[in-house]
Amino acid sequence: MSGDAFRAALRREPAPHTPVWFMRQAGRYMAEYRAIRAKASLLEICHRPELACEVTLQPVEKIGVDAAIIFADILLPFEPLGLGLTFTAGEGPAIAHPIRTRADVTRLKPVDPDTDLGYVLDAIRLAKRALNGVPLIGFAGAPFTLASYAIEGGSSRNFAETKTLMYGDPETWHALMDRFATMVGEYLAAQGRAGADALQLFDSWVGCLSPDDYRRYVLPHSRKAIALAKAGGVPVIHFGTGTSAFLDLIAAAGGDVIGVDWRVSLDDAWRAFPDRGIQGNLDPCALFAPMNELTARVQDIMAQANGRPGHIFNLGHGILPTTDPGKARAVVDLVHERSAAPV
Ligand code: CP3
Image (cartoon, rainbow, N blue to C red; front, top):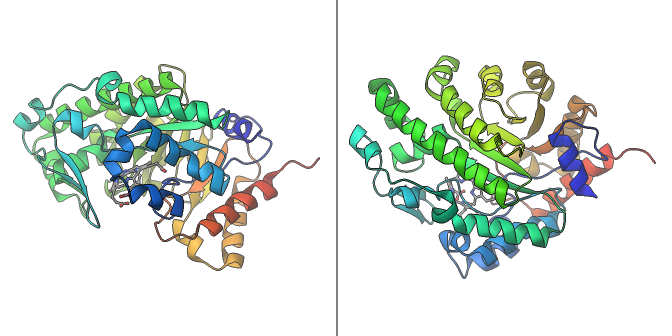
């Protein structure tokens, strides 16, 4: 059972083969997803558990990955918080009421994941049943990455507004981060209770910080979120990009498995946290390379992991919308072939 491989790797136990899944594996690169998206907006799919469940299953069936990730978005909690969330085609997320002052933080509404985000928990329960033993990953945005969207009002290139608040009004910064840490930790714990087999914290943009800023402004809050998430006993995968300069600090936040991108080699990363699992780290653009080059890159990652228990093969960041699903399938097959124990 391929589910055994993922569950074993989460515990750093020997697995029948290296498990593999892809961040953002349910999405626009798949015709099956686009067909549903033609009838419903991103938020509608998220809000309707039967649609979210259907999309969650697509890459398991089509690409053959060892785990599913529940279809949702890290920004969904912005709706009950009262920040006003919309997605616009081509431009990404837009937040109607960005946070800039202490009063903006005070105005945030309390969020109870069981009721305010109950539709995600319902989707998890549905998908869990439909997956028939294939592991299901729940997820949330990490406090820093969420704060960056809440403050900037959308996506950002240099995080100037985020750092303006962080450096200029550290008290408000920490108040906001503490709110988000509690909310995210409780939300992840609720996803674990609903049936998720692992919980991934996405700190997608944390690599814009220096190690010292990470330690001062982010680490205590990510640590709190992870501790709350882990209270139910479900393992936590802590993912970030651009973190090679402070992998020790990322590990100090407490995740069971650390997700890294292609800017760091797996063996260097593992030296920084020998007592954790590791997830990664193929460049998503490697899927645009010719098959012989892609194969060499997959093999190189397998060689770095060297059969060590606790490796979950993944990309270093989300799969890109222009990816050929056939190439994604080829990577899954390659990882399975190259890691299968001889019989
Ligand atoms: O991985 C999966 O298959 C589950 C689904 C998933 C989505 N978002 C659905 C989605 C996951 C895990 C996410 C996480 C997410 N959302 C992150 C962290 C991961 C990362 O890539 O860094 C972030 C930063 C977001 C916020 C977000 N959502 C942005 C910036 C955008 C617009 C940019 C884009 O890719 O279009 C989204 C939209 C979004 N979320 C889409 C999907 C499938 C694409 C839009 C659509 O289908 O209309």
